[in-house]
Length: 99
Image 1: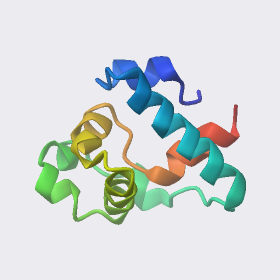
Image 2: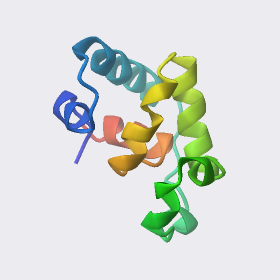
Image 3: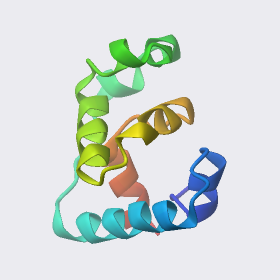
Image 4: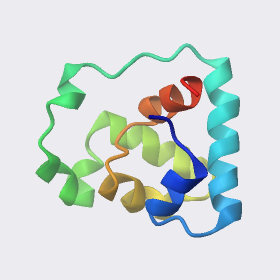
């Protein structure tokens, strides 16, 4: 699977402009950096961990995603990403590279 406009829409991001902004930035960044797949700790996290947004923000992968969204002035969308199981900026990048 890779991240698409439709996936972002289903994640509750209704503005086409915001979805485009996210996809364009991911596309640009994914071509610049070597991206590492998050380690097994990421994949073994209990989904309940992410239901509490403040607790989730203590996770380094969520912090990275939160910081990136804030740089785009889209920090209010963090809960949309988390509730739709997009927990890692690195995995979003990988989904862009795999297109």
